[in-house]
Every structure is written in structure tokens, then in C-alpha cells.
Figure 1: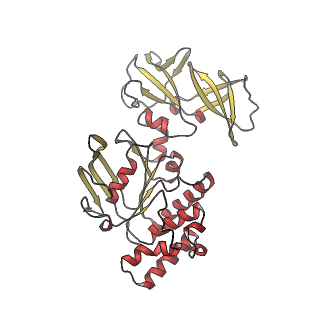
Figure 2 (figure 1 turned 30 degrees about the horizontal axis):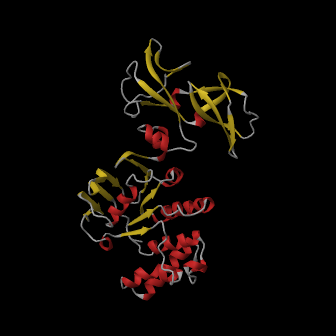
Figure 3 (figure 1 turned 90 degrees about the horizontal axis):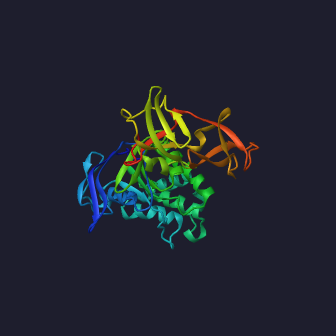
Length: 359
């Protein structure tokens, strides 16, 4: 395999007429790193991936790959391989033909083509499928062939554009594991687009959360999950999603305090990004798994219970807002029951209600 390359995007701007898709976007991906572009539909993540590949033209900025400015290079000259959401397999060719076609066009010797196809097929466990056509393959098998077609090119960077979105839940899990194993084995640079935050959290070395034409936060999965930079990131990442309670930040002799209706939560142990201000309208964010059931604590009335296999998702109200919390599957709690809970200030997030930024 070719040595992995780094990617450096410098103030990239892309637009279509008056519509701006990306604005002054900077992103550095280290060699051998697995970076996931995560965000809702229309946030510009696929457009950004296509800009790296050279499939869309940028209006401003630069794209550097492996220390070389490739902003105006053709896709074939950038040293990349891409896996598409739609598989994009030639229907009249076998799996072997699809995987080898690009190598034949590039003029590689037949022996080298055979070696690469056999090696990648063995890696992806599709050796017995090489003589079948796409119509004879399942969705998961087709996607493996599409990934194999990219891998045989032996390039410095692999780009994935929502490759698992057309598959059922079980196949997504299986191929997600395969992609992670491939990265660990190849040590290749991989940039992966998805709207599925579970895929992002499980695959990435770093996640770039995108919205409104920019990257809202770039960081390791645990950083994104535990210290979201703003309310959007907090709400988008995590399943079940984070709870939000609107209230105010108070400063008294005992220290900072979050208040909302009858709720008063001391915030000793919370790490503020800057000095707190008294009377600011804020939202408190708390993930369902961080609301801990205890022998004593604040009593919550359970309004509804959703069985989730390994857990129960219980719904209640806190500070006048609907919230969810996770209970053990063996819990006997039912609708109408009361549970005592505690909330650790170190596990919550505070967001300015006007700007949405983390406090």
C-alpha cells in the first residue's frame, strides 16, 4: 500500500450562485488519521468530501494533499480513491471486473492486477463472490465490492460518502466493524461522511461536526460527547439524545447555581469555559445515562417507560421540562412510580440560551 497522506483544507469556500455551501472552512487531517464529517442533510459534508476528491470546484481557498497543492488538479491526479453511497458498480461486470477495471485503464500489468484483487478480496472476505455480477449479490456484498474497488488502487487517501446508509441495521454494524478493522490494518488516511452519529463515534479518531456551512466542533469522539462546544453539537451527538432544561445561572455565597422553577442545582465541580455571570439565561444539558438512580435524592415521577433491551428509557419532568433517563433492564419501575435521582455537576453541560455556546 502507498504511504498515507495528510490533507489540509485552507479557507475553502463553495457556493452555487447566491447560495453558500461552505464558508472559509479550515480542516487538517493527519496521515493515517480517520476523520468523520458528521452533520444533518444539507450541512455541506458531502460537498466538502467532493472538494477533496476534485469532483466540485471551489470558489476560494486551497486543497493540499501530501504536502502538494492540488486545488486545480484533476481527480485522477490527486492520489485518492472514493467509495460512494450508491455502490456505482457496473452491472454487466463481475465483482472481479469491477474491482480491476480502474487498474486496467491505468495500464497496470495483469499479474499486478490479479495480485491486488486477490489480496483485497481475501481481506474483505469476498473471494468466493468475485465471479458474480452485482445483481447476484446482496446489498452488503455489493458495498464490500465497492470498498474493494477503492482499496485495490493502493492510494494515500480513501474517501467514504455515506457508504452504509442503504443497508439494514445489522449489515451497517457488520460493515462498520470491517471498515474499522481495515483502517487499523492499512493505517491509511480515511475521511468518512455520515449523518449517523453512532457511526461517527465508533469509527473516528476525530469528528468534525458540521452545520450552517462551517465546522461547529472538531475533536475526539469522547471530547465531542462529553464537552460539546454548543447546543447543536450536544443535541446532535448521542442516543438517546441529551436532555435540556431552560433556567438561569445564579451566583451566591455558596457558589454557582442553576435554577429552573422548583429545581436548584449547585454547580460546584462544573468546569466553566469562562468566568460565570449572575442572572444569565441558560440551558442545562444532561444525558439520560448521567441521571443516576440513588437510594435518596430528588424524586421524579415516571410518566412513560420505553423498553430498549439492555435498558429502560423512562420519561419524567425536571425543572418543568420533559427529560429521559436510563434505568437497568431488570428495574421494576413502571408508569406512575417514583424514583430518586442525583445529578453530578461534573456530568452536565451549560449553554448560553442566546448564542447556544457552552459556558
